[in-house]
Image (cartoon, rainbow, N blue to C red; front, side, top):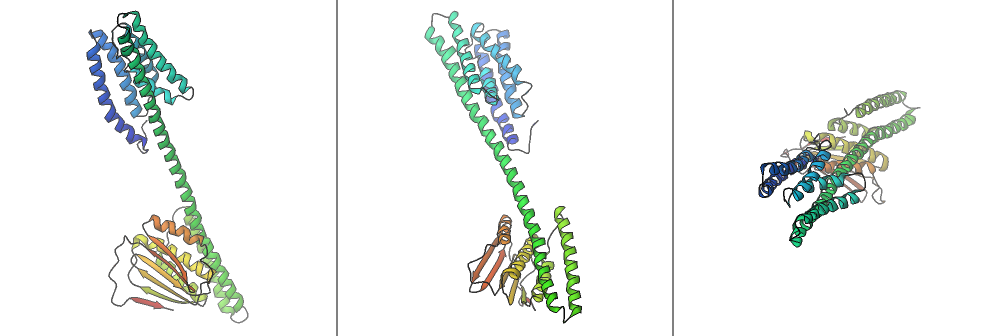
Length: 376
């Protein structure tokens, strides 16, 4: 059965189209040249046909039922050509079938190759029993040329077989890498959901502890929000498990503003244009991860978020003076943004931290004369 979804399928079909007609044409010429009677032509043509059948069935990846019978037929046609038909090209079919089969043997391939070459040479040498007048000519036509052709075709088939093996291994490695990438993506999404939630819960519980003796009503409100947040996280985790989760930038933007407000951070949002729907989810992920990082790693007092059709920029103060920390979530997002034709930039300088995601392939919309601004 041919596997059209693998690289081997199209290549084998191409080989069938490019190799079978020339091989058939050469075989027909050889039969027409060497055969003296119709029955000799029939036997020699049988050897050629057996060789072509193996090539055609190999192109369809289905040789198991034909290769052994074809090998027997071509192996019998060669002695017939040497001893009966006086044909020094009757080895043609054998040097198609034999070299195809040998590289695919599970073991003893070297011995099989030597055996095939020895068989071709020994059968050709048998011609000396009938033509002793021209020994050099017989040795060249019936021994040297056929064995040389056998050696060359065996070598070519070993290289061909190795090529397809490398392609198959490459495809297997690509499949393994795809599985690994999917696992990393799942782990990253799970980190986005639960890591973000845990840090927000920690922030709200800390706030509730501070208000415990001064504002019980606010404490109850914070605890209700924690309960709602945990419930929402459970829902998102289920959606992730069933591949139904898709972030929305507008929801993430409102969530980020609420979180920054709760932490006493002033937020300014500049909307230069409506975000393109094709990158809405990715930009939502960037905003969520950046929000978590600001709450965890910075002592921010101000955050500015700028939205354009093809990107988002988040700038905050209060960044540590230490070297840029290793932010694994943003590192994973950088790969994901890059895979979708975008670029994620992370910079830290003079207490200022910038995170920007841009998709240059999207044509920016015309900036309104008065960009919308939301300050809190």
